[in-house]
Length: 298
Ligand SMILES: [Cu+2]
Image (cartoon, rainbow, N blue to C red; front, side):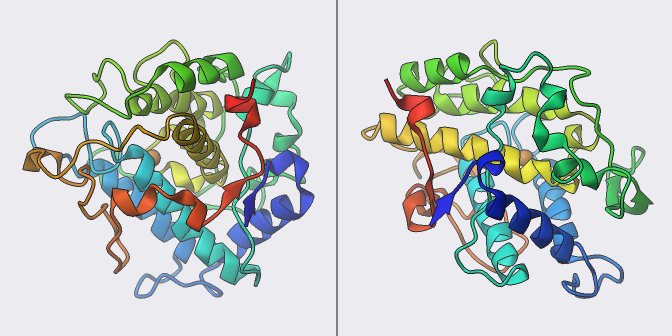
């Protein structure tokens, strides 16, 4: 089953929008035991909690899902988990999350004018019925229940990475990751793609470019989170195809300070399911992308 470009597959785009609206509805998809919260809100909570779980404790860089090797497999699993619920919501087992090809929008004179932000697409989540229900309390650092509009600030800061920037690190980065396996790793495709190194600041700068809720630990409040991360995942898939002999690191010989990031560790989860980075490597058992040629073709 195929993950398509959001802007070139109207069926996938429509199903994504219909599906997230249903998952967001506490009547249709309740969060058990949490009145007025939905299954969609669980994903906001899960993401926030992953960022609060520092690995190891006592430092402020690597957490259970970011600034470390598990960044890519954790977010791959996060999308697959939402994708399964979306399949129920739209009653279509073949549905796959579409991706936002922000490299294409980077070529526009004004990327804000991309039709992805039109009202019939993602524009409708701002100022309509869509509500942010969980946001971080700035004093306690915990999520609190709120009822507010989604915020974006398109293009106010950051920039969209160019296709050339992405193709260059896919080609040049042979290793998946390297010591010290955090945001200061000097090379490795994970740190380039996450955006802590390289002029493009790849994944990070797209969060900054969208702005508003996308810059917070509660960033899955904005449905574009999933389209963005689908493209991040597509770039990882392209790198995997380009470097089939390169393996995931670290293995289980790494110290416990790398818990959640070693190949057979359980990824941080709020659902009752054990999934490891190793189980996320072969993405083709779940989906394929309509194309990787723009990333690794001639
Ligand atoms: Cu994240």
